[in-house]
Image (cartoon, rainbow, N blue to C red; front, top):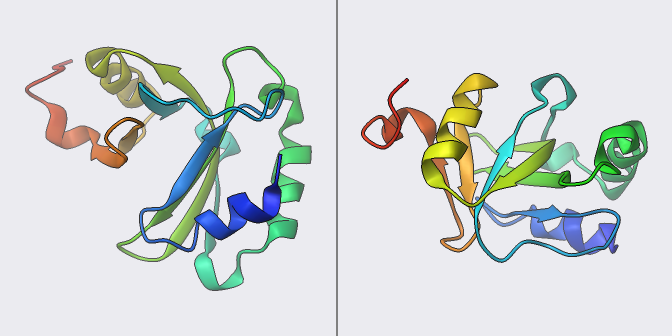
Length: 128
């Protein structure tokens, strides 16, 4: 896993990654949802470094090594915040939205579409 390339990908506004740290593979479809909000880390893009990413991986290996866990990174274009988290993949939009709401997440990531989807805007897909 090339943590420099992952770090570099965060410089694109709304850029990011989801990667299985065990295999180095990234999903090609589905919806990524962060289900461990207590493990989320935020930094401003100007202060974020490859060292920060490496430290996050080490600090969260207990979960990242579990089956179905993905290391996630995202650059929020609204305020230049970089988010690191542990995510899971859902192949179903409704399930992903419900899972995000359960874990107080504001957005999910549509892998195939390459965009973040605001959970509040998905009321017509998944009402709780």
